[in-house]
Length: 287
Length: 171
Image (cartoon, rainbow over all chains, first blue to last red):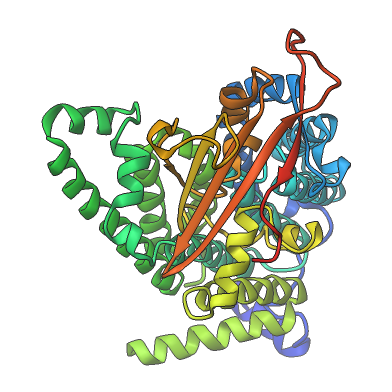
């Protein structure tokens, strides 16, 4: 009896232990290395996103220390500089530890710590407006779910689910950007013209300002803005329907282009999403 | 296998996943709620209004505001801000100090976030901020007075401001 026949025989005798439902066991080291790679990729993405603007964050904290805002809208906890620092450092520590650990319990604790820290950063007076923390939060949610399934699903099944969830999250985030731009001010290019084309010190816009007149720049801004609206809408609506690799490729190209052609600081927002998209590339034995 | 058959297989596979994996089901449900909110934004004026209030830090409560953070809103709406060193209406428009500028999202960031806080508030003087968000014919305008408290003198390196909302929370 060869191996395949043995497997079929075992599954027939005990249908509950089938290929799709067989647990991996509690020892993480036995788990497929691809599973650990997927989880670590996303942790690295979160870490890159959070640390991408570290220099700015350090300057920002100095500003927050010297200029305090008493706004009753925010409870004092959500105005505290200490809370901001602890949350930030906590997320960095949790993602770093998650990169190196193979312990299931440490991984789960780190994922919960990341979600908690990022939830605070998403609602803190000093950081609520930074989209970095929202994209990283969704990646942390993905990580928490993935971490909780590592010893339950087969590697192939888990990677299939993970790739689907990653492109669903990326689609939702892109659609979130698109919906808010379905308005005349974006279709006419007025908003992006003022934000980027007037005085933004970045190679694309410096080059365009050198080459074109104001009227021409407004026209370029209009077509650029329309392109952004249409691309984001298309990606938001259809990215999740693509196959794993197609979605990963499209997602990575689109997210990278956003940062490269607008502002390198945006890698802090899209960095973790690029890592999330990379999960779609991790090979599986099953189609 | 045709495209339709492939789609049916995919959907049934996702349905199987959701049935056997409750945490995945919870996340997909949360994403569905966010997607519903997003799809309704251009269709239902109150939804867009809520997001505008969220952007202006004028939601009915902090909890209500904080619950919206998972909804992605990058570069949403046409948001403008204007900063003045004099109370609104005190000087003639001819002497107006600044032109309104656009911001990507959360226009209140012009005084809460580090760069704006440093640019406009480092001197410890009174500042008035006008924020305006527009979306498909809807508009929300808010005025804020950033009022230095008496605890710190102008010479001090530390400044403290009280954020005073000049417009009523319910528009």
